[in-house]
Image (tube, rainbow, N blue to C red; front, side, top):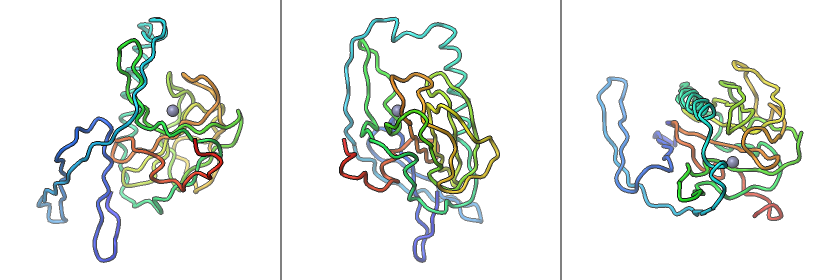
Length: 225
Ligand SMILES: [Zn+2]
């Protein structure tokens, strides 16, 4: 993502949780096509780890579920690779639903010694049926019912910025639909693999899920965990 910054351009890069600390680089091509490599240093960030012991049946997926999850993961990766050239109207996103926000981005859960992918978004607790809104202007690029994420909507805001809304009870939009900032797209639910109704809100930049809190106004004091 490139955004105008005074008389210059600012490159904003999403760094995945899986990125090892150290030197990383981006290649910039001007209109003539000649590449320039810019290097930058990725510093370590520390996230919590939870070790849990549960019955093996709760950890190991049945063969059919595993096959479904594998297919859905490929589908989601393809959707996240969407790149539309426009610059997002803003990088300050709206809170998609009011409620208590978890600060669990990056939390890694280890079940019976087996590591799972770290938590890649923000969970916002809200009652079943509460309206969920688009965090910014964008185009609906995917709608589906997925094994882990339940009823899900993906919205493309341009330049590789994509927001994801999961576990919805109902979906009120369809792929190809343009949404304006704040427009309803569904309702809070408990679909997919969840223990109760909440919104899982994901923000991806250049295919990497990044901490949604970076884009949201600070939570009101009363709702801070
Ligand atoms: Zn979540």
